[in-house]
Length: 145
Image (cartoon, rainbow, N blue to C red; front, top):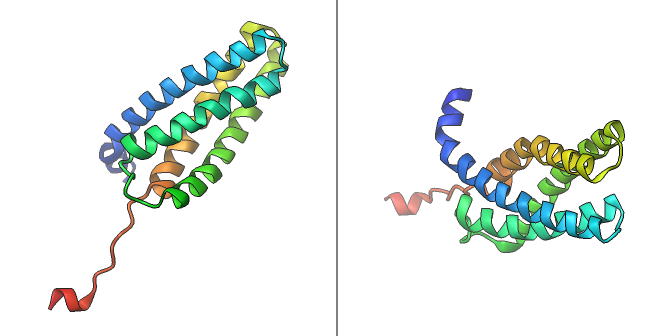
């Protein structure tokens, strides 16, 4: 059952990872920019993540899951819920790793990357199975006859 699921959604996962990779580069770039200019780790993470989330939502909605025909508002709300959970997990992971390694620029980047990697399954499964899930159109009996 798991193998069948993986085969069915493999291409979407690869596209999702590509979008996520470019999103991570955006996140990382802005994080480093803000952190370089002496903003705190937390503020730098919030700013980088915020910019990346906007990009990520639009790319996944329109390309990865081809859900542009669905309700933008419904997608945005569901996406926000999934990503609040994923980002919370991401940040918690980042903070724990940063605490273990110590707060330097290199360690902050290692912690940021680890947080992103650990959040991927949460965001993919949430997006696939809930946020951008194709809605089944109900069969109307009168249309069959």
